[in-house]
Length: 512
Image (cartoon, rainbow, N blue to C red; front, side, top):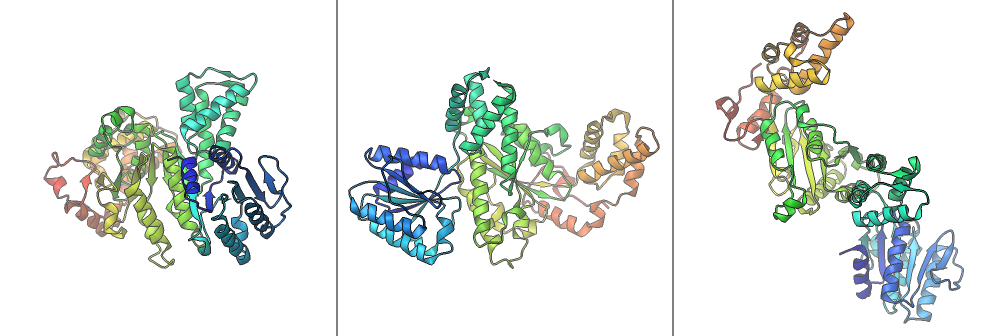
């Protein structure tokens, strides 16, 4: 059901007060005007705001109403004067007045009761969902979603057709891809992004898809709780974790049309649990690159606001945006931080975390969730159950073969050929090191070689490793507790499938 259909349904049910939550006021008015005309062409759309007062879409003369109480009084008089008219009265930004004036709340409630016996309805447009308790029983809240790809495609087509001198080399498929790139933007933001791409060189082509994506990244950053990542990492940038990589490769085409025709449900997500520095964050970035999907990172810390209800509103807004951008990957980093307050915040963290968990369970949009956690003991038992995640992977200390691969990856990333180094000996020297520590060992060795104005050698890396105290030694008890969790069979190893685990992997022994 679209937003217009939902509003029509409430109007048919004689709902007298509808609160329309949206930041797209102009688009909301366009939808309401279409609903009004479809419902009764002879009706009117009357708007009120504190700057211009009452205005009629049909151009009829209306009385002055400079203040909110005046506006509510005049609307009551107009509706009761002609009770058979099926007009829509729209109050813009009215949340600013009902928040600070109980008399406005009372008048609004009284007016809603009166309009039930007329053909007219009252609609409040507001960018926030918060509703006064007094209005809870009299109003319905409708959230206006961001425009879908078809609507953005129409905006793009209209802009191309109406702009003089623009040259477009985009095929119909190319236009659809450009509109798809703007998913997650409001209609006005999408128009600005398209217009900017046009005026840059007065040509629209495939290069403008990246330009629109850049605009979207900037807009998503303003959301505060979401950050947009480009799909730059690949499986070659991540050493080891072959079981996890194979699991991801099997689902690489799961978001395409062929999978839908096969009646294959889109994967819901994975949880990555394990030792710090073993590549959980890098894995999340790699999934976006492997599947060629947008990657959004949900900043749990940025969800919490100082006002009552603000945190819950932020998390709902962030999740709605992720659904609009879908198919996409939503990365929730260090998910245990959502409960870090220990219950001393009036229950806000539990409510925010509960909102995320409920959404993960009930979501139908193709949003693949990647949740990472270092401290599994801080997570409630229901967090990792099936239905929210397709699989729970444990990222353990890398084996010797994985350490060789990780060292080779970091040498290649820095322009060195791994075959010029004794990676076998280095992997043995670095027993107990995690991936982040192996990277830092290579970097430290490069600093030493750079200071002596020569290239890096195997001995430089070996000396850097000898100076490093790995986490497996400094945090021995913590690491052992985590590995015990894997030995108890609570997760799938990211490095070995169930069929190819040897005795060492079935019951890993911590060597320090």
